[in-house]
Length: 388
Image (tube, rainbow, N blue to C red; front, side):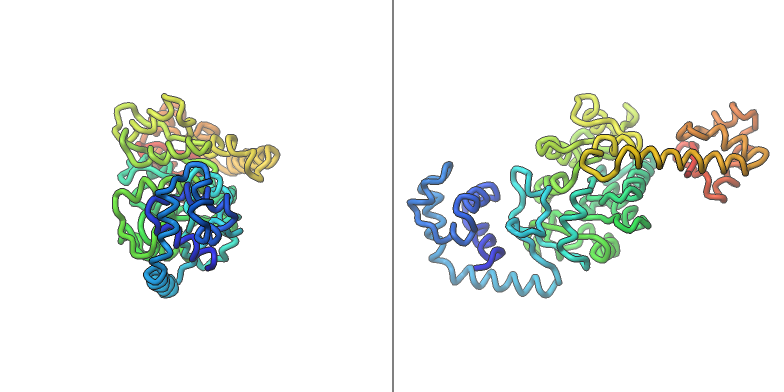
């Protein structure tokens, strides 16, 4: 048997999960050697008893049935155009391999080369959150995804509605050559869920990777998604939570990330907002670091990335220089408003009006002109920020 076939064979045996199978393969050297091991030698492995050992040995009585199901699976894989990467292969993501219970087999769909999967996942950040984000959550999911991609990082998420969809779409829109996105499914790789993400699914296949540990044809059962979340966090250097209720699924991903010794970041929100109770709780209890901008993420992950302090300082210097040159070129009200916003982050229209001495109408006209010049953009709540 080849690696894929041998590992798939072991997954079909009752009582054997990823952790036990991995322990056996490490003990015997390969999945195929486990299949042919005697009951006596299997019982000698720590944590294994006669019941489990007998199940492995007796499974060979059903080889014909297995061969039929495996042939059916292979035909299905060929028909949907996906590939299978086993944990024993070099293409398997190294980060994912280090977690407690990595999936033994990954079904992967992409037009990119499989060896790129491991490369891009080593500089990746997961962005997850509620399926019903506020305008604030939507903006921050887009902003952080865009800025991380601009630094060459890969965005990982779960293709769900809301924050996941925004993160994937933003990554695909990035013009950075090395940026990409990986979608981890809670169903078979041939099942598109939610169905309205069909176009997004196809675009990710073209420019990124679709991944699932579930066999093709597996429906999106609710019990699959918590299991799926350990892969999202396990593939990533860190996980950002963008809005979540106190019992939101994104908090499961955060828990997995902490268990896997990965960085966890959470976007703070209003204490009165049900969409921020989960993220605020993570920050309050020390389970996540507060994130306001991309620099909060990069500073924590810099040791794992090729982004040096010198690079970061150079980018800051270039941004400051660009803003100074823009300020010099502006005149009148535009220069006044731009100067007030410079180095102040997002500024409310009332603050701009009060500081500049301009009435609200004049401020809005001026800001609109600056928007047309792609110098500022409007945020939810009548706030504005510089785009440079």
